[in-house]
Length: 548
Image (cartoon, rainbow, N blue to C red; front, side, top):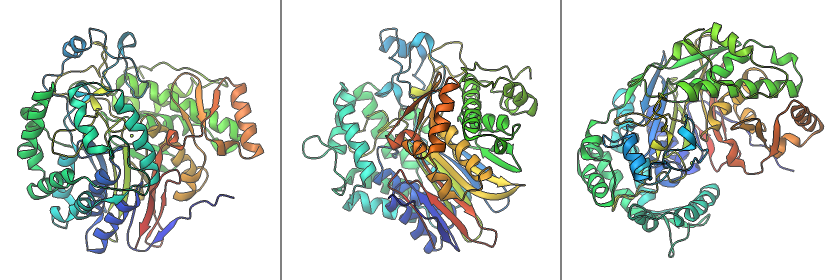
C-alpha cells in the first residue's frame, strides 16, 4: 500500500520545492532572519546546482510576490540576440527550419520550427538579473549571503537525488546525438567517468559553477551582464558560432509587471501577463466559472476541464508574444463576454477549437512564506532538459533554449526577431479569496503548467482539498488534438475507470501514461486562518515542503 505525503504545518514560515537540499537552503535563510524573498532566492540559486537539468544560472525566472498588502510581478525572461533574425535561422537550417519537437507553444510555419538545441536556441539569461532585482526591492539579508548553500554544494559536492539522476541519464543520451563545437563543454561539466550521468546517491561537484556564483554574489549580478562572465560568454559565442554578444547581455533588464487574474467561485487566480502562457489558465477558469462542476458527474467534470483548457491554449498560442513588440489583447481575452462566447463552444464531444477573436468580443518551481505574511511564487527554467546544451568554457553552467519558443511564421505575433522575448511556458501562480491571500503555488512542466494550475485550483476550490491532497490527486494532460494522457492512479477505482470510459465515448483519445514527469511537478503553501501555513510538495518528485 502506498501512503500519501502528509501536509506540513508551520507557525512561522515555509518553503516548498522539488529538491530537498534547495528547500533546506531556503529554510536556513528564514531561520537566520531573512524574509520570504530571501528564502526564495536562496532556494532558487541552490536549485541551479542541485537540479541542473531543469534550471541553471543560464536560465530565466518569473515571480509573484505578496508583500503583505498587494501583489507584484517580475518578468525575468531574456530577449533574443540582436543578430537572431528569421532569415538567419532559415539560412543556418537550409531554409527549412528544424523539425517540430511538439514541446512548446506558438504557431509554426509549414511544420518548420525553431531549432531546439545549440546557439540558435539561446536567448539572454534572465535569472541572475531577476535574483538581483527581487533582492533590491524586497530582500533583507545581504545578497551574497543567499549564495552560501549553492556555492558549498557546487564546491564540495552533494548526493544526486533520484528523479534528478533519471532525467540526467536521459539527457546524456540526447547530448550524444548532438554534433557541433558548441556542445563539447557540456560533456566535460555534466558527465562523469568518461561520459555517463551521475547516479542517484553519487556525489557530484561543479567547481566552475561555484566560481561563477561567487562572482555573481560579489557583484550583485553585474559580472554576468557587463563584467568577467559576460566577456567569457561573448567570447565563447564568437569562437563557436553563437549570436550572443556582449551588447546583448549589457542591454538586458527585468520588467516589473502587474499580475492579471481570473475570478473563480469567490477566489482569484493570479498569473503574470504575456509573454508567459498564464493567460491560458485564466481563460480556462473563466470558462469553467460559468458552469456548475459540483453538479456534474466525474466524467462531465473532466470533460469540461479538458475542453476549457484546449480553448485557453488555442487563444494563448495564437496571441501570446512579447508585449513590448506587438499588441497582445490580454484584457480583451479575459472579459466575461469573451468567456461566454468561448464557453458556448463546449459540446458533449471532444473538440479541436480554433482561436477566437477577442477584438470582437525540464523547469523548477518553488514557493516561500514568512512570519510577517510575505509570500513568494517563483519559477525558474532552462526550458527543455539542460536547455541548449551550450556550456561556455570554465563557467560551469548551461544556457537556456528559450528561442525555441519563437515561431517561424512571419505573420505570427510570436515570430522570431532581434531583441524580442519569446512565448514563455513558465508561470508562477497565486491564489487569493476576496482579495485576501490564500497563497503561492505552481506546477512546472512546459505545456502542462496552465492545465496543472486549473487542476490544482479546481481541487482546492471545488473539492475543498488542502495543498498536499490537491497535489496528490491524479492528473490528466492534454497536448494536441483529442489526445489526453491520464495517470494510472485515475483508474485505481471503479469511479475513475468509469469516468475514463465515458470520456472515450465523448471522443477523447485516452492513453495511460506511467511516467510521472509528464504531469508536472507542483508545490503549494496556503495561509491558515489562525496564522501560520500549511504546505504541500509534489509526490512525483524528489522535493519536500519544510517549515519552522
